[in-house]
Length: 391
Image 1 (cartoon, one colour):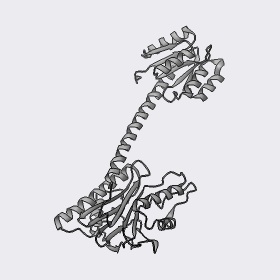
Image 2 (cartoon, helix red, strand yellow):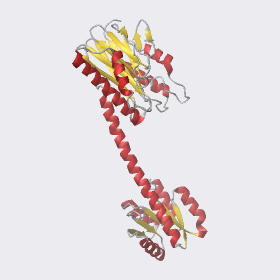
Image 3 (cartoon, one colour):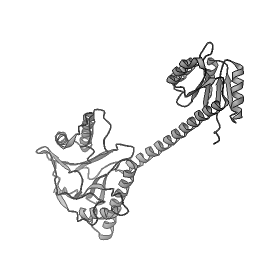
């Protein structure tokens, strides 16, 4: 395999050695070579130019190869520029020191043409492979960051629905660049709000794509039903529609838990279906925080033609409904302990009467404090719906 174009710096205080190395490099068709007669000159050239490989003599007057190598390490140049040491057989201990400092390899004197060709070729191939890997990593990182921004833009950026009577906020924090959580808030018709929160099994790009599919089906299916029938479907029908579509072409049985409800902004009545999702919490000054427990229905994408159930409740003035994914309860501290439900109930109870955004911020801060620097275990998504008024 032909080597890619490479720029090589040859450093040796003996001109005959430099000439010999350069001639042998040219036989390898490596013609872009630069030479330096001592360590100081080598450092100056490296600081003003870029090289794919440095062949560096260990023993030189004024500034040795070891000193040059140490300076390159301190300047952070060895990650992008391999250095192969040139040494006499009697200098092997110094070669070991150079390898420990970050040198890529070494060449013994006198030069063996076959060994020289093999080690130079190997060093250059590794260098170009690292460069390509880094380029691919940077490309993927950039794409993931753009995908993360696009995903976050899919979520409602405000929740200004009847602000005189309702205070609503949502937030999503993916554990990785791309998350598998979703939430949505949109008017189905004047005075009726669709409230949805879901959690796709898994994390990363596959979960994010499945999430986008589920959210698009939710919006399109519900709004199309209203357009054709003149009225919204029941939440159980919404869940059934999504389940039917998500079961198709799903050999891995990827699933999404979903809480979907229709909120009457005039009366506070919430008709909802809970397909395998975390129970919502009702928060009030008089009762603290309590779960809204309903009979369990399966997640979407698992059981075809399942008859999902409808439930209802009323959010009274002064109450807050908190919806969250299981990532909140799965928050772990360095000891491996999870935040879990009892702690969440205690934390939520202290947030009675708080504005929706403040309640979510308070829970997020409490979860971070509990995590104590441990990396996120799962995506965390929350929606707070506060009915203004009352005590």
